[in-house]
Image 1 (cartoon, rainbow, N blue to C red):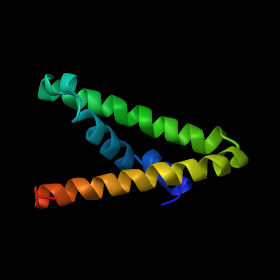
Image 2 (spheres, rainbow, N blue to C red):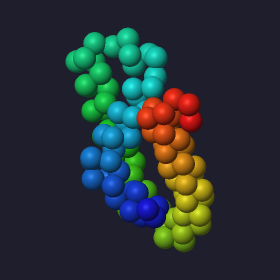
Image 3 (cartoon, rainbow, N blue to C red):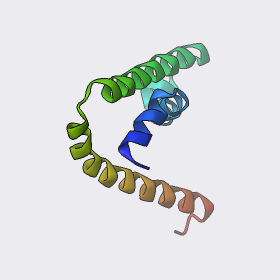
Length: 95
């Protein structure tokens, strides 16, 4: 996935909601909320992520995005490997 593709995914809404939910579910303070509060917080974070991604697509110059693309690939690769290890560990705790 390229940086441009990731930004479009986030700006689409579905990606923003997935990222917001993934991050928030790992926060202790979030777990103490009521379901309604959680829903509202996920909505707010999803909107913020989607709007921020759209702003980056719209207003950040292409040459800056091109420079950031290399950094994005490093971060993206680490996250994909980390998620893979997490899945493997859940399937086989001995891993």
